[in-house]
Image 1 (spheres, rainbow, N blue to C red):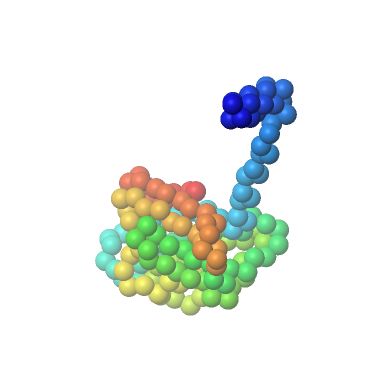
Image 2 (cartoon, rainbow, N blue to C red):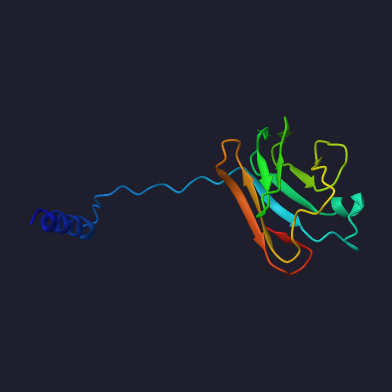
Length: 149
């Protein structure tokens, strides 16, 4: 009988517009997001450093203020992971994370791999906060050499 009374009160409260349960706010989107993934580098996939660096992920900071990315992780479905060292991404700025080797700058970071990461036939890029929680993700299929997220 108690169960029926509680259920009835909940239904009545809902009908009157005075919900018993408070709405849970949606999670705020991360200021730093995956903007574009160029997963199929131009030309032949010959594993040359130039070809490897033709494969990249563009992250964009939509905030007006800078964000420290130390400890952020960029990974694929397989688990290949790039971890940011001490790096600050300016407000409303982008950084490109290339698969191959190179000299890091304020706008280009290099994974240092000698094999491709992003699958041309479909994959997902995940961006994680240093604590491991999800900041953003982007998936694609077989179409085209790149995708906007």
